[in-house]
Length: 493
Image (cartoon, rainbow, N blue to C red):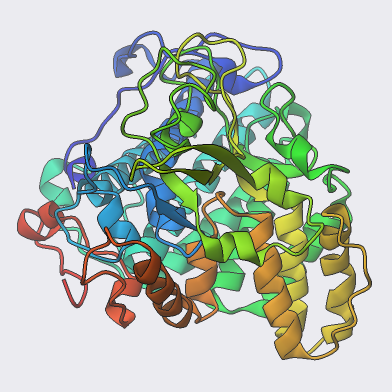
């Protein structure tokens, strides 16, 4: 838990940009001695709170939230192995897997940054050009801390709840809080964030979180803990605000040349401007045998690619005529790992670079979209027995996908199944499927059946793969947290 023991304050100097605050590039580190004098420093501090999340979304989170689900698998690669990623896909889980430690450390790095901002924000000597900038900075730190903890608790269960800067001596004494305590804090932070964002509307910027981001995420938190009444309330507020709407075309959500801020309520912002700001999703997800045919960059070696490969389960989940399928899943006809030429599916949501000559990609990664709000709202109604009221929101999402036939289902069980399928196809490769399976109680059933199908068609999977039980619904704590910081390991590890 190095980010609890050592207070990391390697914050980043950014240069401004008119359209998006994440077109800013880290140039050097800042010393605390010259910090906190004007709102400029606090804006830089707030910018730094986003950075660890930007990093773990491109490196670890897709493994823990998408690859592990029935949506995705991997192209066999005898040259690079599968020691950290492939084992998670197959539920061969171990606490010494570096994916877990990387995700954990970056999460607490982000939390440390948020705590630092919140502890310093009320300095009386700070000169604010607008007090609304203070409200925005405070809201961003509260929102991001909540999101860091939300992803941590969904992965590991109860985790150490650190809410202020701490010394190395005090850090080793911080033990795991109950998951209910973590959720209580997340809810409080998101309500605080929404209230502060409401006072900062005059300084909203594309790419930054805002009031509706906080409320939409709060709705997702309530859905996760089964509080459907409160979920309905906050999601209804987002819908009635009129700030967001569905784009007419699903494909336009994934156009890095024209980033979306109309349907996308919050996303991780990436840019081709630098390796630090960029993602390399398509260079990781394209078949490793495809060379530059998909990436458009034959100069970049993708020998270790082939991840997040669409499964037959996902491919078959799309109905005939669903326009989302071609946007989400590409097919490359070429040589596979077994030296046979065949059609190979790959994740096509994330695109090749527009102008960067290397593997720097600028696609944003959606965290929550308006279609998510609509489907969560519908689900919250179904779970309260308001079945007929749920149908219009589902219909809107299906209409945009080209599935305009009227929904004729009228019972809760059928609508639950429809919503689950819509969520699977609408949000594939957006790191939602595993969490949806867990919160709806379907993970063991769905993944056990999925595992049988995978093992019957993929001879390279481990014999012990897809052996699921309730313990494997929660990830193991990184081994260092158990051995060094004496945290209690999750059962079964």
